[in-house]
Image 1 (spheres, rainbow, N blue to C red):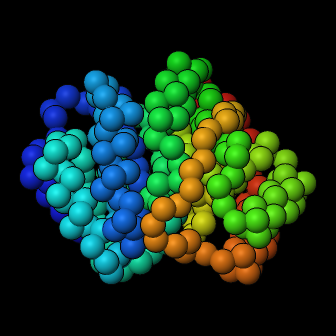
Image 2 (image 1 turned 90 degrees about the vertical axis):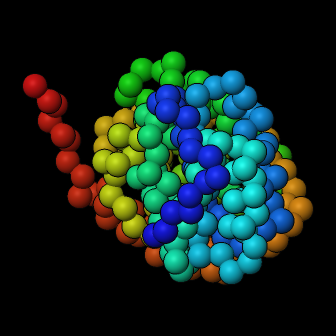
Length: 249
């Protein structure tokens, strides 16, 4: 991992929220998304962490230019592509706030919804570990929506974790809770189940979904299906090996 120093240092005050955004070859969306996030959290104590997951385009350079105007924007980077789950973990490990909000880097998650989820989690009891977004109107192709509908139905039947939209990247969760979870590739899709496994409860809120205006999806339906079947089997095994923590004196 490398760290690109921003032209201005982040504020000294501790942030209330850390917004983590993994990006890979999103030169057409990343800098505009950073500015939207900054506007959505205007006046709040936040830090914005973009994790460049080994992009081969101009993504990192455009983010560096945006950081000139956004002093609390931090840019982290992987030397080579390591996947979305690893990029999220890199951001969470570097985060300074107790509550982390994640958004996908393609701009389809609407940053306007992020403060609402963040506030709801901050005001909730400490045993609420995560609030996940549920996209009310998908702005994807028909084939992608259909594949997602089937995958989510199978997932709910097998895992029974309450998640109706496992692919939504907009989530708010407690950093300390996340750090207690087992890490594996694609674990960002199973955070609700993993939180429940660790003794937390989870909630879900409707969020907006926007059309992609640049770049292209990093997955296709067949690659998603293959990964989902393999991952689902592993997560079922993980759940079967969980034991009650027994309480803490």
